[in-house]
Structures are given as C-alpha cells and as structure tokens.
Length: 569
Ligand SMILES: *[C@@H]1O[C@H](CO)[C@@H](O)[C@H](O)[C@H]1NC(C)=O
Ligand SMILES: *[C@@H]1O[C@H](CO)[C@@H](O)[C@H](O)[C@H]1NC(C)=O
Ligand SMILES: *[C@@H]1O[C@H](CO)[C@@H](O)[C@H](O)[C@H]1NC(C)=O
Ligand SMILES: *[C@@H]1O[C@H](CO)[C@@H](O)[C@H](O)[C@H]1NC(C)=O
Ligand SMILES: *[C@@H]1O[C@H](CO)[C@@H](O)[C@H](O)[C@H]1NC(C)=O
Ligand SMILES: *[C@@H]1O[C@H](CO)[C@@H](O)[C@H](O)[C@H]1NC(C)=O
Ligand SMILES: *[C@@H]1O[C@H](CO)[C@@H](O)[C@H](O)[C@H]1NC(C)=O
Ligand SMILES: *[C@@H]1O[C@H](CO)[C@@H](O)[C@H](O)[C@H]1NC(C)=O
Ligand SMILES: *[C@@H]1O[C@H](CO)[C@@H](O)[C@H](O)[C@H]1NC(C)=O
Ligand SMILES: *[C@@H]1O[C@H](CO)[C@@H](O)[C@H](O)[C@H]1NC(C)=O
Ligand SMILES: CC(=O)N[C@H]1CO[C@H](CO)[C@@H](O)[C@@H]1O
Ligand SMILES: [Cu+2]
Image 1 (cartoon, rainbow, N blue to C red):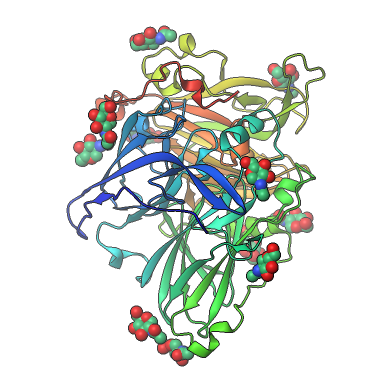
Image 2: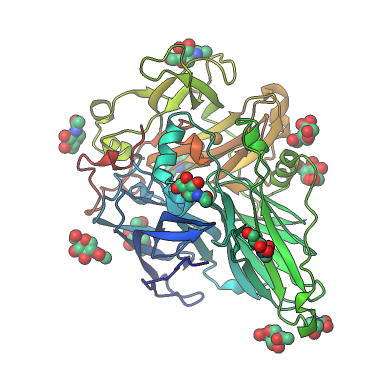
C-alpha cells in the first residue's frame, strides 16, 4: 500500500500519574487532505495529522482535554467528542450548525472539555457532512485510580480497534446525494484500523492486513469503535471468544460471546484471552447487505474486512500453515444484533428514574418531499414524527438559543411533537423543518423509538449528544404501551449513548435532562442525517449560575456567510 500515513504532529500528552492530580491532555489536530492510494484508486481524503484513522486520545477520568484544531483543508470542519457528556460545556460538543459554525479553511479553534464520571472507550469524529468517514479516532478513558481498578482482570495490553468503511468517492458529493434522496451509495470496502485486508487484490496490488501480535496466555482488551458511515459490523475471531466488559464507556456485566454486533456510533470493550494453539487466526469484521438491500435492491456486496491475530511463538516451520477462519453465522443477522444488544446489562446498579415528567413517542421512518417543480413528490427523506430535520443554514442553533433569538434567526423552526400524527409508515408527504423540543432543566424523559414494522425496515442507531441514557427494553413489531412496559429493566439496564432501534422494532430509553444547551438527537447512519432523521433537545438553564450554560469561548467560530462551504442542500 502506497499510502503515506505519516504522523507529522506529535501530541503533547501530559499523562496523569495513576491516582494523581487531574492532568491537561493537549493535542494539535491538523486537518488536511491527502491522497490515499487504495484499490487502484488515488482517493483524496480528509484526515487528521496525516493519519487514517486519526490519533488516539488517551486520558484518565477527571482530566481536562485541550485540542487545537487547525484547518488546513479546503472545507469547513468540526469535531464531535462522541459520548463525552460535556456538562455545562455544550459549546465544545461539535455538530456543525447545531452547536457551532464549521471551522473555516485556514482558521483554527481550540476545543476544551473535561472528561468526568465516565470510563472506557469513546471516540471523536468530524461532525460536518460525510467527512467523519476518514476524520475519526478513539478516545480512551482510564480509571483515576489506575488500570488495576478495572472491574475485570487487568489486561496485558489494550488495543484500539477502529472499524470503518472505505469510500473511493468524494465525500462532500456523497453528502449532496444523500440529502437529495439518492441513498443507493455504498462503500467500496471496509477497514480495521485503516487496513483493508489482503483479500483485496486490485490488479495484483494486495492491501495490508491489520495484524495483532499476541503472546500465548495473555489477556487483551480490545476497545472496539464502529466509525463506519452505515455498516453494522459483526466481529469474530477464529478460535477465540469475547468477554464484553463495557459499551459506550459504561461497564457492563461480563457477557461472553463468540461474536460482537456493533452499529455505527457504538463502542464495545471486550477481553480476549490468547489461549488458542499458537498460529494465525483471522479476525473478520463483516456486515450483511440486508440493511441496504431492503432500501436499495441493487446493493448486493458483502462489505467485509479482515485482520490477523498472530501468536508470537508460532514455530518457524509453520509460518505457511493456513490462517484459520472463523465460522460466520448463517442466521438472520438482525436476530444476532437484537440478542447481543438485549443481553447487555449494567455492571453497577444505576438508579433508574421511575417518575417520568415527559413521555415522547417517536416514529422513525421515511417520507417524501417535492423537489422544485416535482409532482408527485418523489424525493425520499427520513423523518421523525413526520418532520424531516433541516440544519440551520446561517446561525448555529446553540448560538441562537443563547442569545434568545431562535425565532428571528432561524427559519422553519417547529416544536417537535411528543407523538406522531397517524402516519402510514414510509408513505406520504412530509415537511423539512428545524424541529426542536424545549425541555426544562431537570426534566425526566422517556422516549420510545418506533421503527416501521414489516419488511421495509432497517436498523437505526439513535445517538443523543451530551447525555447517557438507560436502555430499558427493545422489542420486535409495534410497541404496545400496556404490555411492553412490563418488560422494562429498571434494575440493571445498560447505560449508553446510542440506542439501536432494531429492524421491525422499537427501543425505550430514559434520561434526566440536566445539562443546559442544545443537544442533537440523530440516527448515526450517515445517510439519515442530511435526509432528516434527527431533532434537537433545547435544555433550558437551571435556577443557579452553576446550572446555567456559560458564555461561548472567545475563539468560537463564526460562519462568515460561509456555512454553505459544506453544503446541506
Ligand atoms: C490559531 O490561530 C491564531 C490566530 O489566527 C494563531 O495566533 C494561533 O497561533 C493559531 N494556533 C495554532 C495552534 O495554529
Ligand atoms: C474543567 O475542570 C477545571 C478544573 O476543575 C475547571 O477549572 C474548568 O472550568 C473545567 N472546564 C470545563 C470546560 O468544564
Ligand atoms: C476511482 O474513484 C472514482 C470516483 O472518485 C470512481 O469513479 C472510479 O470508478 C474508481 N476507480 C476504481 C478502479 O475503483
Ligand atoms: C492478485 O490478482 C492477480 C491478477 O490481477 C493475480 O495474478 C494474483 O495471483 C493475485 N494475487 C493473490 C495473492 O491473490
Ligand atoms: C513472545 O513475546 C514475549 C514477550 O515479548 C517473549 O517473552 C517471548 O519470548 C516471545 N516468544 C517468542 C517465541 O518470540
Ligand atoms: C507457545 O507458548 C505456549 C505457552 O507458553 C506453549 O504452550 C506453546 O507450546 C508454545 N508454542 C510453540 C510453537 O512454541
Ligand atoms: C440473550 O441471548 C440469548 C441467546 O442469543 C437469547 O435467547 C435471549 O433472548 C437474549 N436475551 C435478551 C434479553 O435479549
Ligand atoms: C441575536 O442576538 C445577538 C446578540 O444579542 C445579536 O447580535 C444578533 O443580531 C441577533 N440576531 C438576530 C437575527 O436577531
Ligand atoms: C405530514 O406532514 C405533511 C407536510 O406537512 C402533511 O402534508 C401530512 O398530512 C402529514 N401527515 C400526517 C399523517 O399528518
Ligand atoms: C431534580 O428533580 C428532582 C426530583 O425530580 C429533585 O429531587 C432534585 O433536587 C432536582 N435537582 C435539581 C438540581 O434541581
Ligand atoms: C428478534 C428478531 O429479530 N427475531 C427475528 C429472527 O428472525 C426471524 C426470521 O427471520 C424473524 O421472524 C424474527 O422476528
Ligand atoms: Cu437511521
């Protein structure tokens, strides 16, 4: 592979001593474009510090993070710190035109945030257009009292495993297509830590495998991130099993499985014991076309990536013995994903709110709008409760909210309804609007997401910014309020920042809105963002100064009339 992945900016990391004082972890992220020569194609991609995936940020719980983003690319960019709670710090959250204007070319912006009360694996990614396909990296949070205080045996090594997709198209062009209802675009391949895998043979050029060297008998903590735009991945390693210990930077009761199901936006931490006979074993991250096929019958490629687990004491003579492949499931993948997610429970007993202030029922599906002059309306969009979300174009919502002028500075604002109109799933005309839901400080919310029942469904990983939530239950078919509340887990539900709404089904979550600001709620399938499967919670200030959103940072980016640099039309 001729890809020059050169890190030319070294992160200055002042690591905290275990159990010691909180430290400042400082990085400089230079965003630029470079050509990656993969699969017979020189593709121009946007990257951080010349790396794909980008640099890993490693912190100890309680640390302060300072990231100087220097934009040397020709497009506006923002970075989102996916899963970081950002208490009283919404300004640093990152989604373009929700909390900030994109950082314009040749400008910079410094993100400052504290990582408090969370441990495990999170990640960061561009939150503008489709750029996150290549602008992403892991964010690792270790316990303050040292790795000895993990609630599981201390692993010998910790390995970030970033799963991604490889697109050899112009990602801004892709964004325009998705926003225009052209949702048939598919990636060329997928990646493990940026590697496509040696089964990719384009005119005799073999791509690199991701190789994990292990020592026999040792335990490895794999910190898995799904950074793909659309693929839910199923990860298997021949001859090995996984013990899941955390998801979305929250510990779970150890759960043993030979396969991980991880959807876009999610993270999963697993222990793997290298206890197989010495040799080489394939690690396979695959996705099934079903989630595309249902929507786009033309898509029939199996997107797959492969890496190798290599035991370091494999004897010399056996170097050429075949690499062992995992047996891939033949079952309906939807079932595997559903049960994998359903089997996760919190390790620590959280206190689940039982008295609910507001219940919101959200239908997530597809509708149609009219392009100019189009009749009948045929432009497919996605929607929530019959509103297809539109990003503001001139002023970010957070800024408008802070200065109390949402109604004067943002057109097409609609209050997000707490229940859907009586819609027919995936049918009928809908509207484009900047929907938002105002909630008072300290409101306890329950949300039930309902995907379309029947064969025309697909899974939707719904991600809420600035909050973790409890996932109380999920089900197949239509939610029945009388019956399904009895399936709620109020004892040890998993705490996450992505709620996977299963195909043909629903998911119920609860959280307390105690973080003032403007928080994006959206599907983490990239194609569903410009097409409208999103809304925003505007959480009002509390009664005191320390329950109120502080003013914006002094270097807060301005749009300069340039917000269309990355187009949402
Ligand atoms: C960011 O921009 C400011 C003003 O343009 C400049 O003074 C500063 O040195 C820049 N910082 C970095 C890290 O490039
Ligand atoms: C982070 O924590 C430090 C020390 O407690 C505090 O001074 C600072 O205001 C916090 N920053 C943010 C962005 O919350
Ligand atoms: C290279 O990428 C372009 C789009 O940028 C695409 O049209 C072309 O088919 C690709 N070529 C190969 C060999 O994949
Ligand atoms: C790669 O493909 C070329 C033909 O394009 C073939 O000659 C070669 O044997 C293949 N190599 C491998 C390792 O599959
Ligand atoms: C495997 O790695 C360990 C630790 O680096 C080392 O002690 C051991 O000798 C290695 N085994 C072989 C066969 O290289
Ligand atoms: C590799 O190391 C393991 C554990 O020490 C041992 O059981 C095994 O026999 C070794 N294999 C070889 C080929 O040296
Ligand atoms: C856990 O997984 C098993 C086997 O895959 C499945 O039968 C069971 O229903 C799952 N539990 C939940 C709560 O999803
Ligand atoms: C919004 O409020 C700010 C601060 O008061 C002001 O500068 C700006 O002109 C206002 N914008 C609109 C469109 O009212
Ligand atoms: C959905 O919204 C569109 C556009 O406002 C409207 O025409 C349609 O009647 C709505 N559907 C329902 C079921 O209310
Ligand atoms: C939030 O509301 C709960 C009751 O629902 C109350 O006990 C608590 O004191 C409130 N907290 C704040 C900070 O207002
Ligand atoms: C939980 C789940 O997804 N169950 C499905 C398993 O697969 C069968 C056959 O495809 C479906 O009928 C179930 O609904
Ligand atoms: Cu979606």
